Length: 119
Image 1 (cartoon, rainbow, N blue to C red):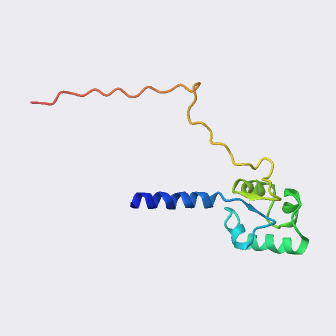
Image 2 (cartoon, helix red, strand yellow):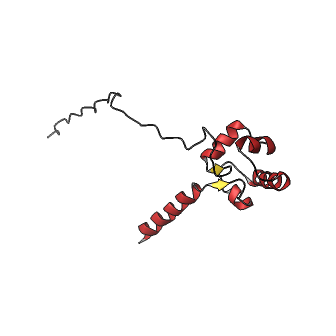
């Protein structure tokens, strides 16, 4: 029973960590939940959105919010941040590289020899 509860809790945390948030719709707490956005950045985003209206695209977002540049916006996009429902071009979730392929030669396991026990 405990294992099932832990599994459910783990799945819930995994799904919330990958939630997507649109900068034009998210409130302070939703923006703060995106990895890489703290409470100060979330406040700057909401303040700028209130002052200048919705962000048109990623370039508009980067130019209007202090501290958000190209590199930061790619990381935020990978963490689930959207502008008008779209991830940043080149910022989509990275694919996990294969650890071994058919072209990679495998190493042979070490050969273990046992010595007979002394009598």
